[in-house]
Amino acid sequence: MAKQPDGKAGGGGQARLGGGGVSVHITPYNNLIRQLLARERKNKKEVRKKKERRKKEERKKKERRKKEERRKKEERKKKERRKKEERKKKERRKKEERKKKERRKKKEFYMLLEGTDAENKAGFTLGLFFTGSLVNKFYNGDQCPVRPECMHIHANNEYYPFSKTYTSGTSYGPRNARDESSL
Image (cartoon, rainbow, N blue to C red; front, side, top):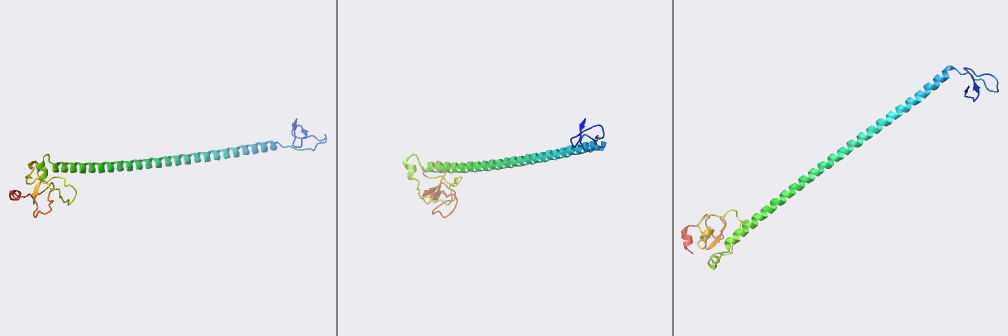
């Protein structure tokens, strides 16, 4: 016997009178209605779950996108940093090479100035005036009368390993033999 909503036992489709219970008429539609309501509740639950799943998936996608964007930004920054560092290194190398070249030129110049014997040293005056930095190529004009292998230019008894750099010379270019004979 199925229990009725009022708690009394009933049989078949109708509740029996008597027994102190209130008579309740149950139609076959009640069961149908219950089933429909249960189905509707189930459907709502499923719809809610689907929505939640979709939201979670969207959140995950957004998070993935954000992570990828962050990663790409970091990679770009790293590349930029590397490029900057490489540029700085190249500039440093260039500066060092320039300094080395200048040092070499100075050494060569002073080695030319320093003769091995007293005669060579006596032939040079160190009152040299620099119009700029050391000139790259020595002017290959008349030979120096004191040390012929050095190829310096003679200008008023002073010797300069520079092109067109004179203190008291009147004309530019190599001096002729008459100037050298005035020594």
